[in-house]
Length: 67
Image 1: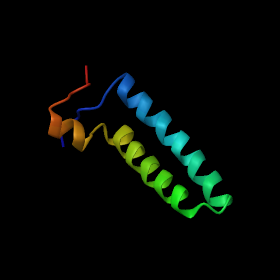
Image 2: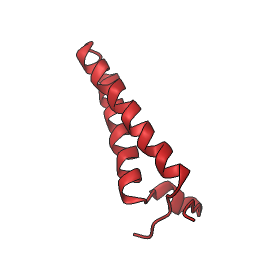
Image 3: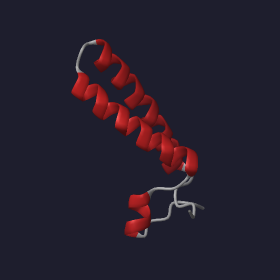
């Protein structure tokens, strides 16, 4: 895997992972299982992108935000 996520893009993805995690926890505690599951998937996806510096969609579209 070649890195294609960096700089501000990586920071935004990490922040989105945190936001989606909070949304998932709150939704699951409120009994909204579908919303909680979708937010969990989003949190895991953005977290993976931020940690590994790789995004499959960026790779497919030829986008590289590393510096």
